[in-house]
Amino acid sequence: MAVNIARHLVCPEVKKRGLYGMPPLVAFTSEQGHNSLDKACALLGLGTENLVRIPVDPKTNGMDVNLLREAVIKAKFEGKKPFFVNCTAGTTVAGAFDDFTAVRAVCDEFGLWMHVDGAVGASFLLPSEEPYSTLCRGMKDADSVSWNIHKLLGVPQQCSALLTRHAGLLKAAHSACDYATYTSLMGPTHSNGNGYGNGCAGVVSLELQRETSKTGFNLCSPFERLDTCDQTFQAGRRADAFKAWCLWKKLGDLGMANRIRLIYTHTQELAEMVQTFPRKLSCLGEGGQPVLSNDCLMTSPRPTDNTHTPESTPTYTHTPKKDLHDRPVEFEETVPENMPKDVHVCAFGLVYEPVSVNCCFWWIPYDLRGAFKEGGYAAISPQLEMVAPVMKKHMLIEGSLMVDYHRLGGRPSFWRVPLVNPDICRDDIFNVLRIINRIGTHCFPPGTFEVKKDAHTHTYI
Image (cartoon, rainbow, N blue to C red; front, side, top):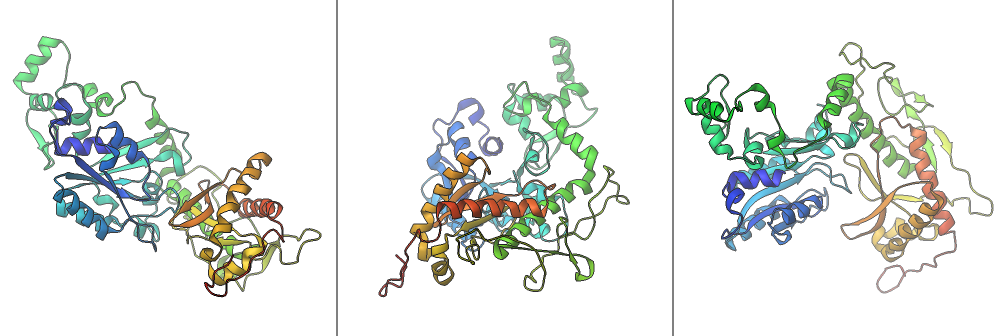
């Protein structure tokens, strides 16, 4: 829908005449952007070849803005018409955020529509402190933002919103009638600088009065102005917005922000456990004292009721804990019989430091851990590539976990665990690793691989 309203702003004639005789319209997105952009370009007749995917910065997994600018210039040189840039707030796999401020500068330079796919990451606007404010910096300057409220805020599917700063454009693009005629009949409008505006309340032209008396349908009634039917592709719809209202009514601004703080903290906790497995370290409470409990790294206790006034609802604040060596061990995985004593040690390796809600990691077979420690994933990439698929098959047969694996940026198959439920505890998180480790040890017990280092290439075979 965002692509459609962006196209209507630059080429409103497409709505009536179609794309015939026009230069190709080109959209841009990160190479890690969601495949919904491909579907949108196909459905709207733009063609998937006119969706240009921009490589990412390997350090951040965010879109390389310099390459974006070069791609826009190249498209213009080829006689095409760039019109739309899709940014991502929370990519599907790495959970990365694009640099919205830098992308906005490119869009302003070339007159492009800036959209933010905030299906996941728009919820990070709710907390105002760090690290959320840095991740979301510049999102407010977008022309449109999509937001899946059902993803992180616990609302049943489907509950999504498209927000745009261009008043009247949704109706102009999707109305079955000639909305330009309709708005002209409304008389003077408050322009937003883009040729679209909302009819000024109480100002009704004589032409509209005559049209109303002729048709018997009051086009300027309050109910007609509130009708959202002409603002989307759909006609009949479920009352999905009511679910969002119920959530807001129950939790309030602070309660919704607290959900995001908890989710982010759980992701950081999983990343910590990946590095300390087979040991689960205790939390540190106030004053740095160990706390043997399921409460995560928060400075306030969980609420005991549903009230959400500033006076009654605690504010959760994430505090990164890097002191992994000084904290006591709360639990340690036991070693099975007839297994090496260090069979669980260094079983996992982080793929990326988590940015938002996704934690990506490898489970490394016992025989490959020395090579991984010395040479990283590149040293054992062919062997790692087969590990997750084999484990996934066993996992599905067993029915213990529903976790998916991915390949990204030349890295061999790894596990991606999105933590979207704030009500889980540290034991739940640690048990995910215990199950993955158990399945991995079953599928690839010690002695499965014979790894040796090639003296000439210094690679492992």
